[in-house]
Image (cartoon, rainbow, N blue to C red; front, side):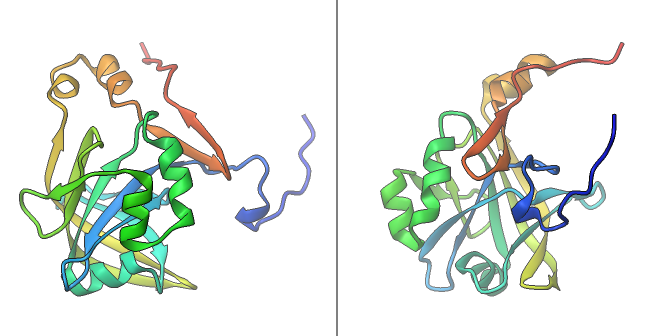
Length: 184
């Protein structure tokens, strides 16, 4: 099959070549004002210590809050949440939370909220940041993780199906993990 040149600007990628897991990063400001942000540029960064990293916009409420409070929560998004998450970029701050209808409660181990509708949460403390262009990559050490009991107790393939994770492809297009395969 012949290959053709393709733009290097991700905003012009159709199809998107690097899909990303959709999560909501939740934070409090230094004044305890809650915030949530949809993020799809996220991945594991280290096993020891357990650490993840994600990219956020330098001047966003999320990055500002993380720098001030040094903690955040990663809330996994499932297919029942995805439409609300795609629409939530229309608003900011507390209005975003209210208009999208998400419920928040305090995390168990850090000073950040969790999104109650999420099937799994990762509670993180800020380990480091790195500015890259107009973005900030935040490295978070995972201090606690929680998942619905029915997911934690299911066999591996069933657990992924019950987790029901969502991948961002490009504007208004997402993918589900509805076909899982095991290498024999």
